[in-house]
Structure formats: structure tokens, C-alpha cells
Length: 332
Image (cartoon, rainbow, N blue to C red; front, top):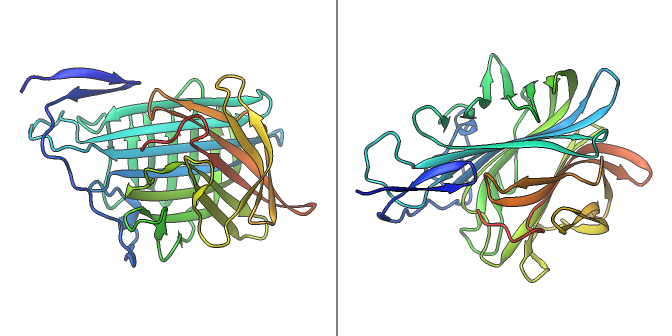
């Protein structure tokens, strides 16, 4: 079979004559998630990500935010080529540090096919990597290592109990039965290590989610917040926005009321960087410019930022706010 190569950002994939289109498995209600098995990859599903965010403090008691995400995607056609180099899965990764001293993100990205050891995601155990970037579970700890001039990080997280989101881990993302994901979180993770050469410690949040149809055709993107509360609790909320400007889907009781927007001087996209969450928690960004340009890997630009949560005048927690689909509608 004759092959050509095309470039999508940093990711090189052979262009082949399409074989049989894959029928991805559906996410179904009443899942039985088992651990540690389900910390690992689920390669039969179309999309999956391991997502770690948190707040760090250095020796000068300066606050930093960080975000590290590893994505796995299964390509939508069958490739009958038996070669280990044939592209069946791709691994992508984003890493960013929010540093108010700079006023914008330090960030970088990676992408590679899951072949020949260049990248991969193991089943039944938490281990995913691309090049020299890695997230895994070893010696009783989650570990992340990011080697980059822009965002070098080496962090270890104490594992905590699993929070099954939605209905026992089944999280609806739209009105159709197939618009859903399997989704769990591990909030309130104590973290220590180094970021850009400085010793740091703080608190983190881990999400793991996999799906075959995350967004409806009518959806533009989502707003998501994960907050570690000062009383030891946690709060996660999201809504899926429609291309018509309204809310396509949100779980009962979830609301995002826009308090203030910020317009990117680079892209012109406007983001609601301060919101009133569920009518109670006022989210304020660590800094306004936390826009992440990931066009070289996932082909999109989004806002991913460290925020403080206030309950009235009282600071009630801190975490992350993610705003996608404001630059252009999201495509997964």
C-alpha cells in the first residue's frame, strides 16, 4: 500500500487509504469501575485524558498554578498493516505554569504516535508518556515528569480516594444516550517537587475521563471547574455550551453566571474569567492571561487557569477553571 505523510502540528501520521471505519464502544449507564484497573488506559474508546491541575507555593510563598494533561486518541479507521509503526493510537500532552510574575502562561506541548516506544498508555495501570514527558503511579505515589525549557516540572502526588462523577462514574454530556463519558476525580492531592528549578509544594486535582462521543454536533465547547475547598471537601461543575450561544447541557443545579470577561490580545477571543458558580462561589483568576495555544498538538486554543473561590467575602478554596470553544468550536 502506498503511503504519504502529512503533518498536524508536531504529530506525523501516515496517510493511508481508509480501511473499515471503527465502531467505537458506547459509554453506558451503571458502569462497574474497578481500581487500580481503571486508572489505566481504555484503548478501545475514542478519546481519553489524565488531567492534573493545582496550586503550588515556592520558598518565597509565591503562588503558582500548574496544569498537566495527557490525551490518548484512537484513530477512526482500521489499519491492516501489521507494522508496529502503523498509527492506531496517538498520545498528546499539554503542560503549563501560571506565574503572576510573568503575567501569562509558560506552556509547551507534545504529540506522537503510540508506536516504537515513542509514546504510549498502558492498560490496568496509570502510566502514559510521550517522548520524555510521563505520568505514572509508582512507589505508592503519582508522579509527573515534564522536561521542557518552558515548563520543567517533576512532581509527586499522594493518592486519595476516588470520587465517581455523575451517576457512579457515568457522566452525561448531552441529551443523546451516547453523549457521555466515564469520569472520576481524585481531589485534595498533596503535591511536592520542583517547577522550573524551584522547590514547590501544594494541593492538586486529578481527573481521568474516557469517551467515544464527548460533544454533540451542536456543542461549541465546555466550561469546567474543579475546586479544592479549604474545609477538605471538593466541588466539580461543568456545562456544555451550544454553538447558538446558549447552554446545550448542564447537570441539575449547575450554573455559571459571568461576572467579568477578558479579551485575548493575541487571538481576540473573550473568556469569562470570573464567574459565579452554582449561585454561590465567586471564582477569581490568579491572573487574567491564562490562554493556552495548543494548535501544534490538539489544534485548538483555550483558557485554562488557576482560580480562587470565594463564598461571600470568605476565601473558600482554590482550583482550576477551564474554558473551551471560545476561540473556535471544539473538535475532539
